[in-house]
Image (cartoon, rainbow, N blue to C red):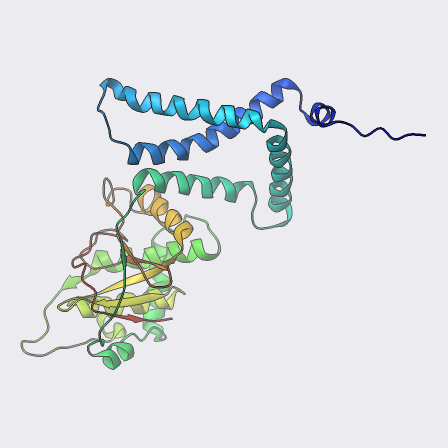
Length: 309
């Protein structure tokens, strides 16, 4: 008895899906790849300003055709990969943490952030100087004080409670709720003439008033109180707070939440501003001058930073 080894052509024929499904799978995959590819091209190619944006329509059609041809060349392998990927997602949906919903959310965040800020201004924190009044500021960020903790908790129940998320995304939304509450209530008041007065966070809760360092201390303490990681930036004549967002994927999530869900009106047609530290971590601006997280920097110069891990 001899065993017949099938040829590559026979294997391809056996593994191929019926023609209608074949076309649908390839086309859907093409769309998923073509949209972010087009966004990159749109943001980086010169706009010829043709009537009804005809140049952009042509670019999108060209991208669709090229991707379609490439996908058809490796059709069988791609269909197998898609089939296995769907099985993995189904398993993740039923038994794990990463399923169809998370994939949809991640893709939506990615596409939105690419269309809004494909090339944001990244500023890398380099050589830093000693932080002024460091010990006083560390003591003033009394995040473990019950008054600070209770205020931060009240902010998370007052704002954005309807957005049901888990893990890091929930923490991010709650930190944004803290920012919104402090931003809405803060009243800028100068220090006594000739004296640098640094108020404890628990002290600032009494009147929600003070100068930039008092605001930075209160914001850092409240962010820390709900599990976030804040830091305070020193620019020479100004102090302001930032919060740790994470990596580029986390930034995509933050951009979508700020511009499409939580601060849609305040951030309309505005850019998201942030810093990248020497470890590649992204920090979002929370200054009192900003009307939304990631608002414009009052000063881009960085002379020192104080992180509260």
